Every structure is written in C-alpha cells, then in structure tokens.
Image 1 (cartoon, helix red, strand yellow):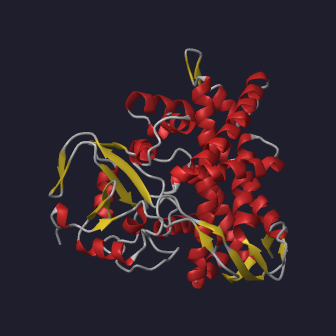
Image 2: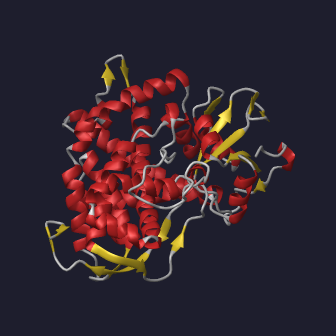
Amino acid sequence: MTAAPYFDAPYFNIADPTFSVQSAEVRKAREQGWYARTNYGIAVLRYDEVSRLLKHPRLRQGSAKWPAHHGITTGPFADWWANWVLNKEGADHHRLRRLMNPAFSRRLIGGLVPRFRALAGELVDGFAEPDRCEFVSEFAEPYAARVIAIMLGLPEEEWPVLARDSATIGLAMGVTIAEDLPRIEAALDNLYGYVDELIADRTREPRDDFVTRLVQAGKDQDRLDHTELRDSMVLLIFGGFDTTRNQLGLAMQTFMRHPDQWGVLAERPELGAAAVEEVMRVAPTTTWVTREALEDFEFEGLDIAAGTTVHLFTESAGTDPLAVPDGRFDITAERPPHFGFGGGAHHCLGHFVARCDMSEALPLLARRMRDPRPGGEIRSLPLSGNTGPTTLPIAFTPATSHSGGTTA
C-alpha cells in the first residue's frame, strides 16, 4: 500500500503530553502508509523506511533544533545542547567521536562486567521488603548511577548526586522541556561543578580509567579542550544514567506482560544480551530518532523540503508487522536490528556500556524475582520523546536460595 498524499496523511500532535507512540492512531496510520504529519515535521512509522532514512545522505542529525522547537534558543542549556557530539556534523563530529572512542574500549568496559553483576545482586539483597520493591528507586536508579560511578572511578556512595541531577536534565528529552527549564539549568550547573573537579583531579593524578582516557585523548595539538571535555562528561553522565534507568524500568514492565519469557530468562541467563535487544525493539526509551533534511529531496513518492524535521519512530518501526510478522515478544527469536541506539554516523557512543550493564542485570533479576507483577500504582513519563516509568512498584516471589548474587 502506498502512502497517502502529504496533506491527506494522518496528523499527530507529538508535543501533547498525552500523545502516545503506541496509540491506536499510530498503529492505524502505520497500516495506511509509512509516514504521518506532525506539528514538527513528519513521523516515519515503518521499519524499512526508518532503516533507510536513518542513514540517508540528505538527512543530518535533527536533535539540534529540539530546544528551539520549544522557544529555547539562548542560555546555558541551549549552549550545552549545541555542543553535544550528537548535534555536531561533518569534521567536527568526526573529530569528537575519534577523540572520545578510546574511553569506550571493550577492554576497559568488559573488565567492569563482574562488578556490574555483583552490584545487581547487592541491590536486590538490599530491598526493603523481601517480596516487593519500588523498582525505579530501589534498583534501576541506583544501578544506573552506580554503573556510571564505577566507570568514572568515583566513590559509589556519591551516586545520589549523579542520579538527582541526571534525572532532572533528562526532563529536557520530554515534551515539557520549556516549563522544566529552570530546574534543568540548575542541575546542569551542578554537574558542571562536579565534572570540573573530576577533570582537574585526573589532570593532576592520571589513572587507568575512563576519565583519564578522555582527558588524555588525542595528541598535544588535537585534544579535547576544557569546554569539550566538560560538555562531553556531563552528556555521558546524564545519557548513561537516564537511558539505563528508563530502559530497565521498561524491561520490567515488558516482562511482567510476558511472564513466560521472564521464566525463560531465569532458566537461560545466557539470553541476557538477546533480552536487551528484544526489549529495546518493543519498548525503547528513545521512542523516536530525529533527523533534518539538508536539501529538498524525494523519498518514496514524498517531497521532503530542506529543513524538514523527520522523526523516525523507533517503537513503531520495531513492532512493524512488515518487519516482524509474528508480532510476539520472544527473547529466543531472531529479530531484525532495532533502532534504540540510533544509527549511521550518530550511532550511540555508549551502546556497548548499556548493553553490558543491562544484559548482566536482567538475568539476575529474573532468577531472584520470580513471578513479578504490579504491586501498586505505576507512574510514567509521557509515551513520546524519551520515556520510562518514574514509579514502578513490583510484587514478586523471592528465589528460595541464592549465593554470591545468583540463585543456587
């Protein structure tokens, strides 16, 4: 079926906090064609078109205009946003990624995996009640923040500072950004102060850790300058925390709807990596990836004008029946790659970290928390932009025995 002419295509107000990327209207629009109109530009709904447009040479990274869409064009937050490696293009983008890549080496991150596993067990052991928890505050939030602390070589007891300010900055990824701006900029200022001290410490006393690698990245004439270092460090702290916390909460919600798959994961912990990929296919925290047209071009019968914002709906693409005909959530099945980490030149720098820490946490949780089910009122961010539960009470049957963070 071909798409309807532009002005006949469905329309979504994606700035409305009640809009949901999983709504019946989005599903119906996906049946009609591959795109819809929005108040920002176009939304791409199907897997094949998202896959091709994600790397299209006439599109650039589109998140740079997100604050401006909400009237935010100046100030500390606007400056920081503009300096993200994610929002750079061409030679500037290539240089920043080249200098930052060594800090994300598989050897460095892989060496931390046993600590991630032990941390997950420690947090489950510390639940206030043996058969229930508030998953976000008792597991997802401290796990995500302490993983960042472990990576950066920080005292783990400082995780509440990282979590508090990162969670506040994360509000910038949602549709209420304008009203949240004063809180966002205060949190940004706090993290700048924290990062400045960290950079100064590693400059004086280098270590074999992530921060030192960033400080020393490149050669004398081509290093990250102080502004680039602090902006990148704040982005890494915020991004690493916010996405992991949200994605773990979404994973638990998904598995509670599919208890048979939770049982499979408990029995087959080697499927941890596959579980992460399958969760991110059906319930990504990043519900859309944004691009912007560099010039006028035609795609699948649609004329796209220069400057048009193109939202690539990751969840809609991942659950597209044309790409996954059976539609099941199945951690044992072969699936096409999801788009939760973006793609092309702007593929997420920290994807290996996120995959490692979540693939360690989920199997352990499956072994320790049997038969998880909602244990109270669940509150969540809007199901658009970056999403996830903010409160997730879970009741469960504790495993009968465990040793060293795993069940016997």
